[in-house]
Image (cartoon, rainbow, N blue to C red; front, side, top):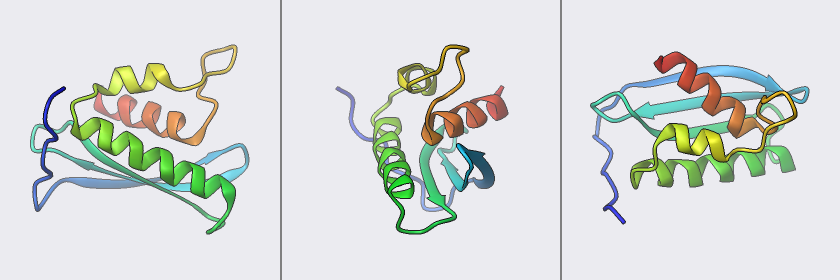
Amino acid sequence: MTGRRTLPPRRRHFVFDMTHENIAYTVGVGFFHDDSPAEIFINAAKSGSHAETAARDGAVLCSIALQFGAPLPVLRHAMTRNAIGEASGPLGKALDIIADGAE
């Protein structure tokens, strides 16, 4: 296992809004200096809901995985998807949007 990459004190960050399963989310993404994703934050419009808790916890785990060197494509592939390949959860959808922006 590789060591955890430390986050630069100042880093590029962008925020976007998305909707998944009729729930509005705000997603923030911070980047390492090489423009690879370093951290993800997800908040739901309905603070304190089970959907927000699950999305936030997933984003924390995803951030830790990214900082330990897990590639974004591997994390995307690990997300649950429906029969036509769309992400079934908000974290998967956010990762797809992030990846589409990086290409």
